Image 1 (tube, each protein chain N blue to C red):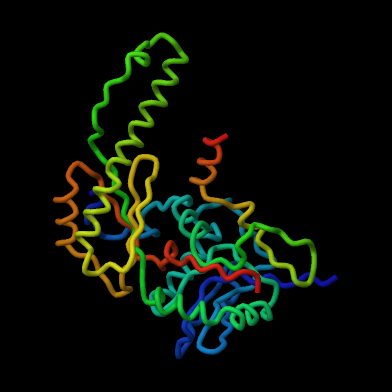
Image 2 (tube, one colour):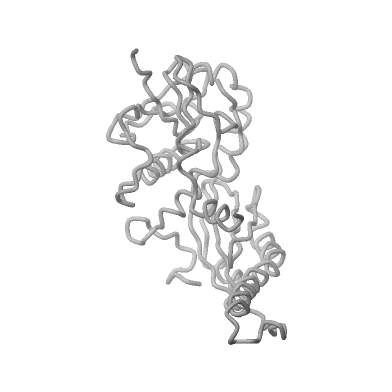
Length: 68
Length: 237
């Protein structure tokens, strides 16, 4: 096992937590409000999903790059 | 034209007796909207750059995760994907009105659960003899292909491991497991376990994993809110 106490979860304040690991968890998973990556045009009923269009996990970016 | 206020959604909760006073992203107050036993945690982010990566310690994703984990320590919740925003509280109200039964069901299934994430990487890769056609060390093209082949061998080693690793974890955690996922990463297997929020790992678990997975490196992170198991799609409110 790689840690001293193998099953002790590492403390993000003490250990380096890669941004990519956090992003892999919080932007690839969880409840979604709108399924499609559509960006509405300025309107009172606008729902923004633009963040996910711009921000994706490092692994997904890597996969996309390797596929092209 | 007045710009609509942008509200970032954090998680769905079973409405508790008392809602904690916390700060949301950018030091704005974390707010709550409750209806019929369900609560959505949100904060106003109209003037906050959610994509900024100037400093990893200040990245909004870290702040967001910390807030959801703080809530998860005390309350039944399911996390919302980072970046989901709505324009105005009336949208949150509409969300709850439209999807209450599905949200209740998801909270009943997942609200009191956590996910544990293990990464298992083989330390001893099986020796594969290079095909004859890849042994020419002078040809640059062949050298390139050889590197690609060797990289794929590492991936295949992890692929070979996939079912073995899955069986070991199912065996070791069988009495506490509600659900699980295994995923092949570039050179390792990621195992995600859905367990009760109160579950604590132990030395005997460590010992069993090490004994049953010799020649492997194991790392563990968690417990997290059940991100990978919260697959609910609510659609546009």
